[in-house]
Image (tube, rainbow, N blue to C red; front, side, top):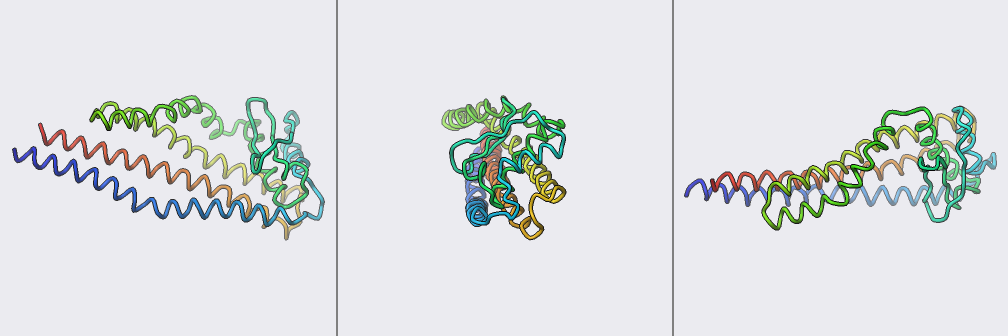
Amino acid sequence: MPYYSYGSYYGGYGDFLANNIYVLLLIPVLLLSFWAQAQVSGNFKKFSAVQNRRRLTGAQAAEAVLRAHGVFNVPVRSCRGHLTDHYDPRDNTIYLSESVYGASTIAAVGVACHEAGHAVQYAVGYGPIKLRTAIVPATQFGSKFSFILLLVGMLMYSQTLFLAGIVLFSLTTFFQLVTLPVEFNASARAIETIEGQGLLYDDEISGAKKVLRAAVLTYVAALLMSVLQLLRYVLIFLGRSNRRGGRE
């Protein structure tokens, strides 16, 4: 009887601790996420209103980055939407939004060069992006089924199912962790080429850097949110394991 009481208390306290730690840490992470999004929108809007003095469009800037790294088989095309710019390895194409593709602004050059940086990563076989590509199928599977297993495991008090859900969810966290060096490296390649090829004047480069740094912050916030959620699940699992141990 004493062991049962202690186990029940510890297990309940484990759930309480998990939820309270989650809420306590969630506030600064959410603030960082909101601030990062505001920085992205604000800096992009600000420097989209500033024409670069070379009148270089986003498409031309992306092509300049590709040429500087000896990459010549990647087309640059326009796509619809706002901040929908991306490099698609499936068809080896850089897609730039309408506010970037034909725009000769500081923001357009920064964003376009960043996406070209991703194309260069694939062309040179950059390690982290090869790893990220390799784990995409597993990450998609984990993202699709992790919450189902977590929910069923929690409702049925099945530690096995709950643990399986944690493992699948951790794949998403790992994917976001691998994404960070990929994004930092793409921005570094972009800025290095902008400076080395003189795509922007010196006093314009700081604006491009602000746009790219703000974008990277959103990935940092996403990773922290995922780590926090994973920590919560692990603490709940450990608390329930101790509860079951106490009952035995």
